[in-house]
Image (cartoon, rainbow over all chains, first blue to last red; front, side):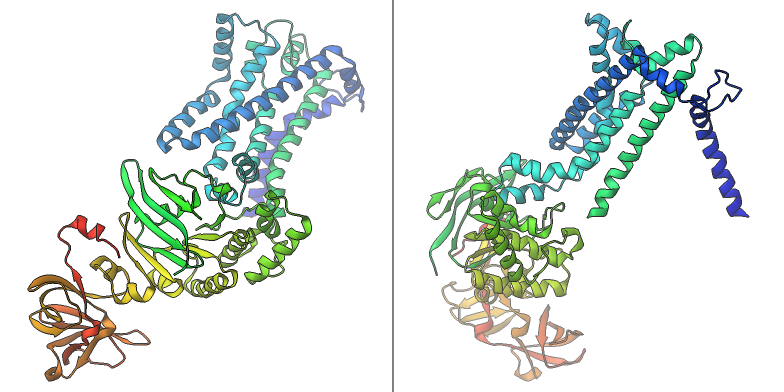
Amino acid sequence: MKKILERIYLAIILIFMYAPIFTLIVLSFNSSKSRAKWGGFTLKWYTQLLSDEAVASALFNTLAIAILSTIFATIIGTFTCIAMIGLSAKVRSILMGITNIPMINADIVTGISLMLLFRFLHIGSGFGTILLAHITFNIPFVMLSVMPRVKNINFYVYEAALDLGASRSYAFFKTILPDIVPGIVSGALMAFTMSLDDFIITYFTKGSGFETLSTLIYNEVKRGIQPEIYALSAIIFIVVLALLFISYRAPMSKAKDN
Amino acid sequence: MGKDLITLEHISKSYDGQLILDDLNLSIYENSFVTLLGPSGCGKTTTLRIIGGFEMPDQGRVIFHGQDITKLSPNKRQLNTVFQKYALFTHMTIAENIAFGLKIKNKSASYIKDKVKYALKLVNLEGFENRMPDSLSGGQQQRIAIARAIVNEPKVLLLDEPLGALDLKMRQDMQYELKRLKEELGITFIFVTHDQEEALTMSDHIVVMNQGYIQQEGSPEKIYNEPENAFVADFIGDSNIIRSTMIRDELVEILGAKFACVDKGFGENKPVDVVIRPEDVELVAPENGTIKGIVTDLTFKGVHYEMDVQANGYEWLVHSTKLSPVGSKVGIKVDPFNIQIMNVPASMDEEAISETV
């Protein structure tokens, strides 16, 4: 009896979480424009979506920003973590606290303050400002996932490599880097997803005439929702889901090899 | 003794204003098994790390084969280290771990393969090439760490408490293994430990350290039988250390009774410290003893009995294969050769510095 109740409870939670997305995905295949009526299965919203130039350019912008901001944030975040090894535990925890603030901070505050900063510095809004903003909010996510790995570095292994004749850089790439790579990979994936689905900060830093997928969807919605948007949202959901799946699987399969 | 291989000259080192090593001088001979022995914080590991190149001394020089290598980085030194926590490369196979140094030296694949095989045979782990370090026990990991170091044919192998993390049985096995390896390879081993038994079992030469100073160095027998000061006597095995008076040459007054001894040159009626090993205290019939006492405690230790004997206000520690029950009256006798006389240090500082011969 208890077991059955547990199952039902779990089912309810899953339904609440996934029913809206499931509805969206179903509607993206609905040939009728109505949200209430099933007009038969179709892929036309998907084909329309792919031929839509505005969507194509927004998709390109989104991916370009996600990829570039991930690369920059991963490099900066990783090196920051490594550099922080030399600090005392107290200073390090204070610094980690400071870098965590943008993560906890409301997106709208971060967005508005970045917008104000860019205005103040007379940096023209567009691709560059969004990229800077995304790098900024991605760095803490990278650090959050790299830091625990860095803390557990076994420096004797680095010394052992030196002892066996390795140069400092060779020893770093052969011993320290492999130990922190899982942290870097999961940090990069997290940064990529964060950048991909960010709306608020992008909205405030983008300026006019530049759209990413999320701002494009927002604009479309204001004009009345087109089923193409369902198709687009469904694709975004699937991509994010796939990334999450990879980021969970990656460290696990590595562990299994060992 | 052989030729000097490594010489440390006037080495000083401090961390955060705390002096770890103070004007340390040490010569290490070719093809010897040298142990740096001392309690934690005595500077033994720092000394090893300075030889390995992982620490730079504040003052002094490290001479290797007549060349000053003080500022040479670890990867340029002709010596290899076995670290306390094994420090294996966990993402590489055993073969890749052992081949690490050889690959850097651009050795041919067939040479590397042979060497890896030879090294695994040497440490009794044949066929482990494709295992991962995590799947090995602590003792096996330490053997791999040794194999990884010796394939590079170093002139000197540095071992930083390599057996510290192993259980007792494994540790004893590894002691013999290391001794055998040393004989087979014919190279110099510098071994760091805080375990006096380990030091006595394996070494040709022991360097006892405390508070950044060398307290005494010499063969295990010399260190054990003729400790030069109370620290060494106390640290190496159990001892009875008794403040006494040297009446004249070859006669010492211990706890009010006169004992014949063999030491000379301490002057007349001078305070001295006397060291008597527990196994050198003979228990005899009360009337035959130099002093009389009562057995207060008895423990069976396997090879011998350990007894506490209260005599003339001092509790003597006695090891004997003959049992004297608690409460029995006994006499204490000590052979003159087994009484070791040491100068009394004038101050704490002198105790630490006590010159070595």
